[in-house]
Amino acid sequence: MKVLIIEDEPIAANRLIDLLKKYDEKIEVSAKIASVKKTVKWFNENTEPDLVFMDIQLADGLSFDIFEQVKINCPIIFTTAYDEYAIKAFKVNSVDYLLKPIDFNELAYSIEKYKTNFNVKTDNASIQYSHIEEVINKLTNKYKDRFVVKVGVHIKPIETLNIVYFYSLEKATYIHTNDNRNYVIDFSLEQIEKLVDPKMFFRINRKYIININAINDIVSFSKSRMKIKLQDSDVEDFIVSREKVNKFKNWLG
Image (tube, rainbow, N blue to C red; front, side, top):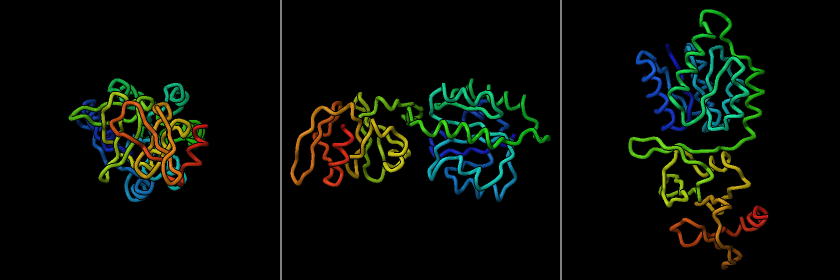
């Protein structure tokens, strides 16, 4: 069986490959793609795989954008970090969902479901565009509940509620959690701004995105700026840049 993986988080993509090989060593991964643009190009230049694993949020947009640019006739299993109640809405349709971090038993169930319901030699494997549109429209109103990080050789999910702030340092992006730990993640701050709930998180300057629930104190600072103290943080002060002060006040309130 040939599969295509469309996933912009390298750690998540590699974990999926490991789980697929655990399920069946004969599974062939045709490609690992991280963006809408490259996915469209791949389908235009290659024979379709037997099965596609596709993340909802990609590096340059939503995976739904792919279907507007290229016809896909093979079955798709979506991978996502959204809540289970939203995922159940798609269980009744011709494609399945896997919740991140992906569980091996769930993966095996989805593949068995694919084998039972799809015969690649028939026309029944074509994806119903209207079904995909309906479900993705529901899901895109939600925000990321967790981020997957790598700790040594281990994969660990970090609940968004437990994140005190996101920050950039030396061209990398990190999570700082409420147990005073830091983890590198495969997102830029610009991408994170779109993935997290704006009611909970605010980008105070070029370097930091903070959690409103972690704020301990706010004081006025020089040049019309504001200084913030956060709980569970080794950083002494977080400065709200002057151009963001008004938006920050509105966000608080």
